[in-house]
Every structure is written in structure tokens, then in C-alpha cells.
Amino acid sequence: MPGAGAPDVRHSKVLIIGSGPAGYTAAVYAARAALAPRLIEGPQPGGQLTITTEVENWPGDESVLGPDLMARMGEQVRNAGVDVASDVIVEVDLTRAPFLAVGDSGTHYTGDALIVATGASARWLGLASESIYRGRGVSACATCDGFFYRDRVCAVVGGGNTAVEEALYLTNFAQKVYLIHRRDTLRADRTNQARLFANPKIEMIWNAEVAEVLGDGGGVTGLALRDTQSGAMSQLAVHGLFVAIGHDPATALFKGQLHMDGEGYILVTPGSTAASVPGVFAAGDVQDKLFRQAVTSAGMGCMAALEAERYLAGHNIQSAVDGAEADLLV
Ligand SMILES: Cc1cc2nc3c(=O)[nH]c(=O)nc-3n(C[C@H](O)[C@H](O)[C@H](O)COP(=O)(O)OP(=O)(O)OC[C@H]3O[C@@H](n4cnc5c(N)ncnc54)[C@H](O)[C@@H]3O)c2cc1C
Image 1 (cartoon, rainbow, N blue to C red):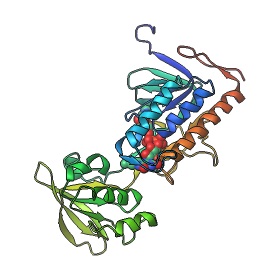
Image 2: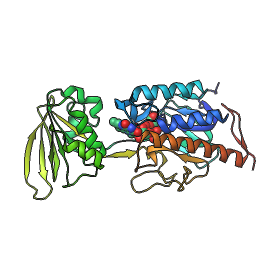
Image 3: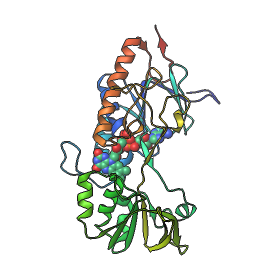
Image 4: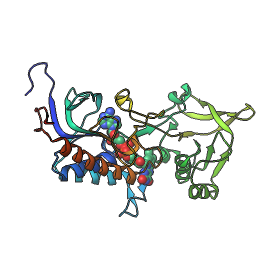
């Protein structure tokens, strides 16, 4: 038991932050390497796939519900003996060994090696009116909220795969879906574009941006649109707005401690998950803005655990779990 005022310190050889496909996979591999890892679940246990429905590109499952897939991964992790903590890391110190991660609970988690798998989250337009109506007509997750728009009219903003997938998904419920894009071509891949253009419920609004979300106080009633070419304003009557303009990596915690690119994605050694601090590894969407898939995240989680194992073996780091500080023997 920690003394009065002293933090509860929990040590593990491998500390994993994040419980998406990357974190869970890293945990399974680290556990099977007898590294007794600890995994911090964070604010979204199971990660981004818990807010989707069917996943049809996870190997071995032709179709599986995202929450079910992540529940199965979580069960596998627990069955492998991983210590899973329901906590959110609010501060880290990567300048000393062992690395320190402080939980919202006040617990100090230390690790001889650290795997960062904190993922990414949706980006918003940044309009005051968008914030006012978030949860009352404005959403970033069609699969979560699409059901509420049965026979209604919705708009999706964006031009990438996420925006197209959101628009297509909404056609399962909505009477009509507008896809608003600030340019005159989409970034989405060809397969997605073909599905989009073939769907009679979807209408493209090119060269337009949302200037304001309009509402009646209770919910969204429309959008004020600005033509990105002429600047002309127009109004569009909709009941819902789905913002699908990309993601931000959850890396604020590591600013100034790990090297990142201009968008805040953690930089790793090419062909590896090694971050700029030796002993720290980054896996999944937190370091990948190219693929952003469950299977690639899981693959990087595997790499991170194997690399952490090699790092610990190479540095001959031996430590006991919980309450003991690591001995750096070299
Ligand atoms: C709606 C939707 C549908 C998708 N559909 C598919 C699909 O069909 N197929 C596919 O392959 N991919 C899909 N994806 C993408 C896929 O979900 C991601 O690529 C994948 O989840 C990334 O995994 P990850 O482990 O890197 O991070 P995430 O899944 O983002 O998990 C991040 C984890 O980090 C934790 N965390 C964050 N901050 C902290 C903190 N401060 N302290 C502790 N923990 C923290 C969170 O709680 C979370 O558990 C979809 C994504 C979305 C949003």
C-alpha cells in the first residue's frame, strides 16, 4: 500500500497505452513473450471500431460487428493474463527510465518499454454553431447516429474515403444524402467513388463549404453553404450534418517528448515502430495517416511488442512488477 500522499506506483516491463487493435495486439504478443504487460484502456475501451457496425475486411471474418470484434480482442487479452487498467493517461515523462505515465486516477504507471497506441479521433469544422448542435443533429459518426435519420435528409462534409463511406451508410436510413466537398474531385478510392455515384440517394454538392449550421434551438434545420469559387452563399435544408474531414492523432500527451510530423503523427524509424526515444514504440493510427485500418494497426501492434521484447533483451533490463523500479543493468 502506498503511504499517505504517495502515489500508487504500478510497474510493468511493457506498458501499453491504448486498447484499439494496435494496443490489444501488442498486449497479446507481449504476454506470450512472458513480458507481463499492462495495458491502459483509455477513454474509448476497444478504440474506434467500437463506434462502427459491420467490419468486412478483418481477416477470418467475412462480416463482424466492430464492437463484437473488439470485445473478442479484449477477452483474448485478458485471457492471456494482461493486466488491463481502466484509466486515462494525463501526463507522461519519457526523459527517465523507467518511463512514467500518470493516470487520471492518480496512479503512476511505469514501464521499462512503452508502446503508444492511442489512435486518432475525428476532426470537426470548428464552427460555433457546429458545437451548439453536436449531438442534436451534428455528428462525426454515421454508423452511431444514422439510425436517427430514418426517412430524413442528411449532409456529409468531406471528400475522402471516410466521407464517402459515411454517405453510403446513411443511405440505409435517410431519404436523401448530400455529400458536400470543397473541391471538384474526391480523394476517395475508385471503388468507393463508383459505389457513391451509383447510389441514387446521394447528390454531390461540389465546390462548397459549410459556413454555418442552422437550427431551431432543438435541432439542425439546414446549412448555410459558401461556394468556394464564387463566395456565393446558399442554404440547404437538412436534418443532420455528418462531419467526415479526417482525424487527429491522440498525441498531445507526447508533444515535446517524441518527434512528430506537422500533423502530430508520431514519427518512427522506417520499417519499425521505434519512436524517437529508445524504448518507446508507436503503433496504429497514432503514427499512420496512410492506411488507418484495423488490420494495419494490429500489424503494427505486433511489431511494437516484438521490438519492445528485443529492446528489453538488448538492454538487459530486469524489473519486478508493481512497486519495483527497473534496474538498468547496462
Ligand atoms: C466509423 C469507423 C469505421 C471504421 N471501419 C473500419 C473497417 O471497416 N475496417 C478497418 O480496418 N478499419 C476501420 N476503421 C478504422 C479503424 O477503426 C482504425 O484504423 C483502428 O481502430 C486504429 O486502431 P488503433 O489501435 O491504432 O487506435 P484506436 O482504435 O483509435 O484506439 C485508440 C485507443 O487509445 C486509447 N487512448 C487514447 N488516448 C488515451 C490516453 N490519454 N490514455 C490512455 N488511452 C488512450 C483509446 O481509449 C483507444 O482505446 C474505422 C474507423 C471508424 C471511426
